Length: 234
Image 1 (tube, rainbow, N blue to C red):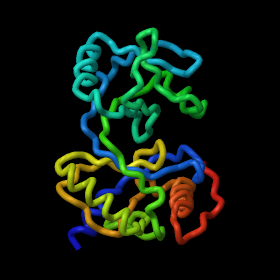
Image 2: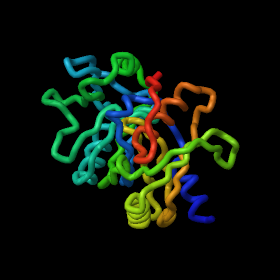
Image 3: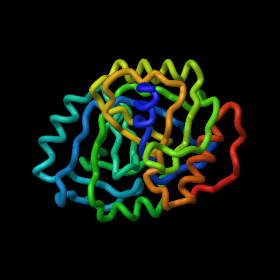
């Protein structure tokens, strides 16, 4: 029962959808550190062919360099809210040749890039080696969490259960980020191994039926024992 309750807490928040089910993966990664730009000091450096750019202000430049030095072996995620704008692999530079930070990857939706003209907050997450659960879901069912909100129950394969248990056990005391492609579903601090074949994803916005339907259908599309329904991303 305790393991089940931990699992229910582990996958707790659902953000806005970003991609179609056939392009989407579900994965988890330990969060090794988070850099937050100083509120109100975001210096947008304009647009390039790749989209909006950011130049760290004087208050952030030295802190950011120290953060990058401490996380050289990590993948970096540029995050706004519960959305990953850009993933920076270990072998890729955060900055471009002009010394500014591209905020989005090529192919990002235009409306999302436009919203970055005056962002309220942007963070950089350093994450460790991830586990890919895309092929490790046996079944998906709809349910309610302990607060009565809509939730999705994921039944993992034995291999998927072992992967989650090993990841959480090796990262006790750290945040574990769970992502559905570029959507951060949850990033709670885990206190020990989560060893349960069933994980629950609780919707953070139950007032948005379209979002709930998209997440349900996307996850069902990943399940090995279920067929997806054709619900477009809102």
